[in-house]
Image (cartoon, rainbow, N blue to C red; front, top):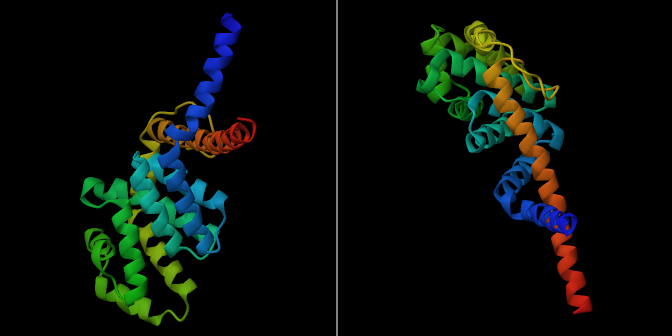
Length: 220
């Protein structure tokens, strides 16, 4: 009887994943669609979100920031480089400048052809001449050159702070290979990676529930 009750409970918990992960599954589906629209893979979407969540610690804002990166990046390598800027922005500005705002303004800067919003704030805050940047950006002849310039300047102006941000945390347990070793970053990253596993199981659960309902309709 105990074994039977345990089995029933396990099945109930499995089917419950479909509902408990619904919102997260919808968010990830939108994110994967955004990356697919940019010619990037679902794996890149997941890796970008995991990286951002490890820094930001908030699921929804990490999704928002990841969607902005999907608009920014033209390759998976570029997406990874932009995602690295989240630590740099957080370390340099704290709550005064959020990564998702920085990425959004980077997109606007590319569209307008001159520094605007939070990207201009980053330049000013780190002592980089905005007019000099605008001239450098105008001299670029391709989107790839513009991306490379913006990433180069961002890294030069904030990279040291971002590296220190990672190193100033004690070493923590490494559960997932792609997660950083710093304790706070590692905890967030492990949580994100675990959630992605639950999301996958939630997809399977939802499919099983649907098939079970169809079978019940047939045999009822």
